[in-house]
Image (cartoon, rainbow, N blue to C red; front, side, top):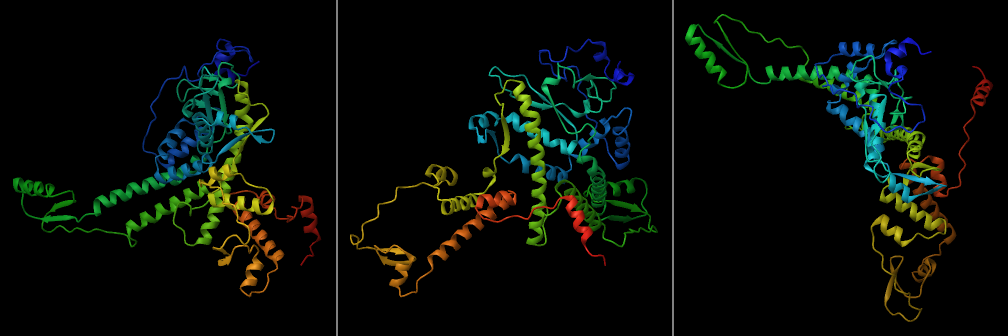
Amino acid sequence: MPNFFNFIANPFKWAGSSTTEKGSKAPRQSVMANSMAVQVHRLRQDVGKWRDSLERAENVYYPDRTQLLNIYADLALDLHLSSVLEKRKINVLSKAFKVVKAGQEDEQLTRLLKKPWLREFMSLALESITYGHSLIEFGQLQADGLFKSVELVPRQYVSPELGIVRSMPGMITGIEYRDNPLYSGWLIEVGKPSDLGLLNKAAPMVLWKKNVLSAWADFTEIFGMPYRSVSTDATGADLEDIEGALAGMGQAAYGIFPEDTKIEFIASGTSNERLYDTFIERANSEISKLILGQTMTTDAGSSRAQGEVHERVAASYTTADAEMLLGILNEQLLPFLIQHGYDLKGCELEWDEAESLGKKEQFLIVQGVMQNSGYKVSKAYLQATFGVEFEEAEEAEAPGQATEARPILGYHIEAGIASRNEARAQLLLPEEDESEATAQRKLKAQLSIMQAATSAGLPVAAALKLSGLKLELPAEPAPEQEGAAAAELPKK
């Protein structure tokens, strides 16, 4: 028997008038079909209103995040906050993906999914980090059996705690979407129902910053231009003429006072404009730390070493977001697409790390493969990757047939001298240990590959495997081993 609270939230479900049996083939209906468009209220917000809205959103019996989302709409207009949020999202969206089947990329399936709707889905899924729970609805399948569009169900209408979409924000009733086959087969939920997103943490700092900016604007308007003062005994029409003349002389503030009036402008000991600017800088740095984990990828830093540390922190945030998104794609999206007829059984999505490497890093890897593994790299791959054109090399002339000089080791040595030591002998230089020189060149190439791979974000173990270096990483001790080792330490 359904409890009373669920009956109040979903009266149509329990009446049996709006659902069919689960698993039946129901035609697609939009979960927003019965909802009415409502204007977002953009009022002046402050920290007090945020606290009241947060209490409503966290209400145990009837959570309602409508007012909190109205505050979010205002926060999203902040330029710095908008910039760092977009940067964090773009860092993941700029990564290329591939569809892998039986350990190999299926290029045809990769092209099938590289569509605008999937990028939009990925963007909306990542926005769950910012806003919290997101409900994503897919459009109708087209004649070719493929999706063409996805869209976000407006968060003001969704109550994830109750699992309903309301006809108007703030209502206590609505359509249940999780167990309703009319809607559930076209929806994907991202994020926990109780998650309120990073904007909830950013709200106080952004609101304080907006108030300080407003005060700074007032200060600039009042004190940014010279203040004009007139002392006069004029009255009546003469006083009105003086005031009219002052008003027509520009926007600077002015005042008309009797002869014996004393005017004082009392300022604090600290320069007001610097006080405002310092607060805004601190607010921006706190916002950057919340969203990106650091500040120097958005603001000027003090040293290269610190900048590299901040870059690594930013890369760790990107890696975590990318792994989260990859889990959503493989655990939720792929089964959803298979259910709707996509031929993706046995497939999974992976990030194409080669696409994220720069030309220099790719060249170092190709160079290391050719020097150390004995494999050849196809001319077609080199042309496509580096954009260079190749011509067939001229056949080498037999010794004794050529009379022109050719450069070997930077010297013009007669044709027919092939090795380094033969060239060095002609110049009366001692022989080199070619085996040692070869080993050094090989090690240098392997280290270059290792550096390029780790700079691109690959784990150390994977970079070692790619470079061919034979190193064994120390195994991480198990928690119980760590405890035992700590117990064996002598006590001071």
